[in-house]
Length: 240
Image 1 (cartoon, rainbow, N blue to C red):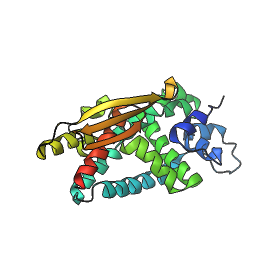
Image 2 (image 1 turned 30 degrees about the vertical axis):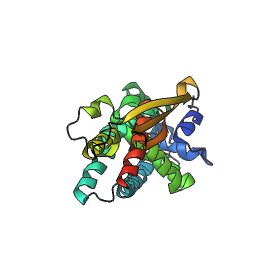
Image 3 (image 1 turned 120 degrees about the horizontal axis):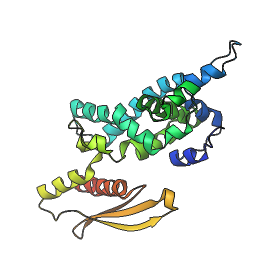
Image 4 (image 1 turned 60 degrees about the horizontal axis):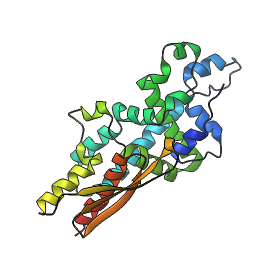
């Protein structure tokens, strides 16, 4: 029985005009090979979409980094990008999206635990990026990457990685350092409200430094919302 893709569409915030694009992005070659009838028709697996998605991911992440960090040198930007497009980071994104439960696998791949394999999940995530692009263009992909890749919280395995470039996703640390450098009070964070159903809550967090510097932001977790709020204050301070 095929999985209902509506929850996944909701999570990535894009309703497909052609749902088969998303279905193909989630179809592993093992399933396509089993379903292939030998008539010469092209196999409807996700390999080409994975190829396209990898390029789109690299371009949009580079574009976002240049916009966010106009003063960073090429080497700094390259390190940030390397983390954000790494298999480790993308695997965490795929797991938070629960992509494994939507994959269409052949019997042998299913039996060997394919739904939890890092390579299959990362490949599927890149294919989903391509599917969103082909269905809706670059803007919905930008929104998806902003929410799920650029501002994603670190998994435990990532936080133990000494090579992780904290400058990208850890705006809370960056804000604290900036406040100290300018002899300002330390940042404070307050959860203002929670909304939405239990399985898909949205948190609103306020970041504040003294009476003058404040920003609010939303996220699917308190950590993500706090990071986004910290970014708001950080960027305001940089602009002064």
